[in-house]
Image (cartoon, rainbow, N blue to C red; front, side, top):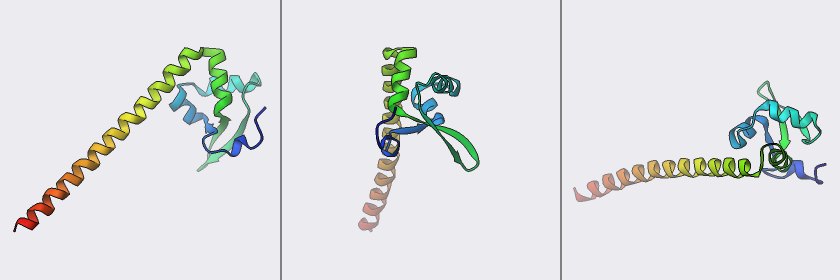
Length: 111
């Protein structure tokens, strides 16, 4: 059973689509957990598309039970690495844009 207010905490609940992206688990895996009463869920609809909301803590416990702790650690590490690489890429793009702007400003000052 979920703790009081857990559904309302930021980052505590996630959709089945986000669970697929972050933990590499299928919707069928989540549905099996719901049917086994291991996962609590709520229905949601975004722009007419239905999805399941589940609690992150319960999902992680269920993944450990079914797939093992090593799997969970590996997937979480891969997800964090992907986020870091994306952030580095974004920062490089921003740095290049700022460098070009700096060069333009320096050039205009020389005239």
